[in-house]
Image 1 (cartoon, rainbow, N blue to C red):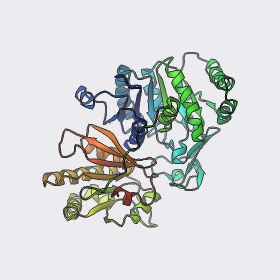
Image 2 (tube, rainbow, N blue to C red):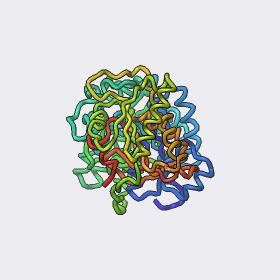
Image 3 (cartoon, one colour):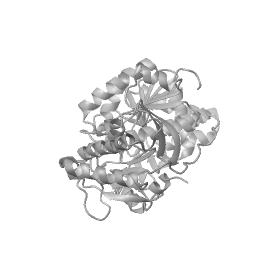
Image 4 (cartoon, rainbow, N blue to C red):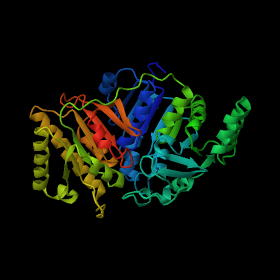
Length: 450
């Protein structure tokens, strides 16, 4: 695992999820770097020898044609790099639709660039309160919240862009165009573990081989959904993935549970824990662009910040308003105040979700302008936090970073990354990117540090 050839490659369909996978691999001791798009030769050289190479993308917010264009370039890059495992990292809730973030489209685009016909799709990520049982996905409502079937989840069933209306992931992905999905269900894992002998392992291997042997077209892609209900099953799933990847380069699909499974199978000695986040060196600028009720609660609890409500519609339609907002944020930061601007509702009022993608882009543009303005005034920001998957993706692109490395983990699913940039004012910037469902209520307070 310490050779110059990478053992693991991953493409994240949004930036927040991509950093979660980065954290899993880095915390396992793998030399890991997340690039902001297909890296140049210069960026690869600057990163040095790597065990794991990631590319952060924005496919989750793209229509199929745009996905194919972005992910084909990613596939060509990884085909040349040739890691045994190529991980298509999707959201742990699998929220996607035929017209946007189509996971089936992503699989079909990436698969020609590997040589193994088997495509494992790992459902669930217990560390985040995501569980897949008999192919049905369940998710907790916030950290430590009640667990709901995904199509009855209070947030995901009414997601503003990709509401989840089907809990059986085989049916969910079939509606997007992925046919012939088979399944390995968790009782098989438990039988294997309970046996404690090669007999149990052989039974699981035989079940997988039977699925592959019964394909109508022997050389066609063979997607299989794998349950995941407890952390104890990670090593079993990881063994299946790694074993197959040693026969032929493998495309694996799922959340950061794919990385967790392989790490569990490799059973690498745990490196020293990353140090806790220290007190911020200067004021923090945070932006909450998620419409999640959890993020709204996090905003309300952020008493260490000057909170600024943002009119999301005026932000994109009124340049004078955007400039006034930028000036107000910069004034507070110049005065040494932490600032949290938010576009989502912070009360019981309904959110305007008709232009979510454009709001995310407008938000990202303003975030980048604030960061640039502070640098031009000789006081570059050293820590920035962004809530919202689409906003995070656009913001990292607007900040013109070439890579992210892992610094520490704030809480499960929320990573603090170190930015890499050719701009000295942005090199080393501490960056928190989080999805709407991630983190405890006191997340922004914890971002200030101890």
